[in-house]
Image (cartoon, rainbow, N blue to C red; front, side, top):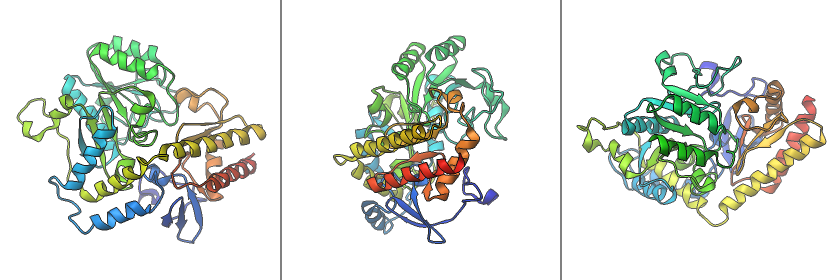
Length: 411
């Protein structure tokens, strides 16, 4: 495997290891060392590892066809649960990865509007598809808005003209871009909480109003925020209704599954019985809606919908962020812990973080060293902390002790 990795992330070589197993809030490497897991599969393990309800559901599911390609009961049951929970959803279509979901959402928006351009926000990670991999982590010198910069080699240059970039939380700049490209933008796609950065009051509402005025669709990328920030995701938390939303991570309970959700008027363009319609939009794949992933998703959502689940997730996140803030202040280090709910990120800057450019205003090399030291001391993270319902107060206290010790080690 290139770089000895499965995907696009690799730990520093000095702390790299192989996971052997995991339970609850912990994972264990092949040498038997224990880590408090704050990566959690990059987010899908919101309940922690090997939750008994999920394990029981999977043990039952694997005794039946693991993949049917056609309709199956579990895939339908999960779809019904998602539609009942997601404010904008009347129908869903499944994918496999979050990258599928954002790709499909942008595709169906172009089919519905008859337009080609997509507007996204600098620093927002929308997955690994060609339209998404634009200006996620642009290096200096930073391009002028709305120019986009590919995050990978191999992306056709022509797509740079089809993806427009705006700064997060800057409604005036979005308005200017839409005015300059009047009638060309199919959709604005946004992570409502972008990489832990909270939207300013009125920002998401302003996007909704601008889209309505320009006959442009508003897409929420809820791959991270969906079922994490609230039962109804970012839509419930921020009280803004998008036209479409993309889901992944939590809805598969740790197994590969994603979905696009929206009103029937838009989603019906993906009806395969309409293939002769020139507006028909292809969405599908061999393992879409497979019963094993759907079973894990149903079990996960059933736990999350229990009274007190989101209150506890918010409590864990607030406890961790407040503890980090106290440590930084006590040690005299400019920094902050951003995020809300069970999402946190430590940034070593005292500049108010409102967008990508302010998020990289601190000592990035020191941030990387801090993340590595935290792993070395037994708390797994990848710069971002995906917190799980399995974390105890003792776990959080240990995490804060490790942050304190790690910060002392690199000063």
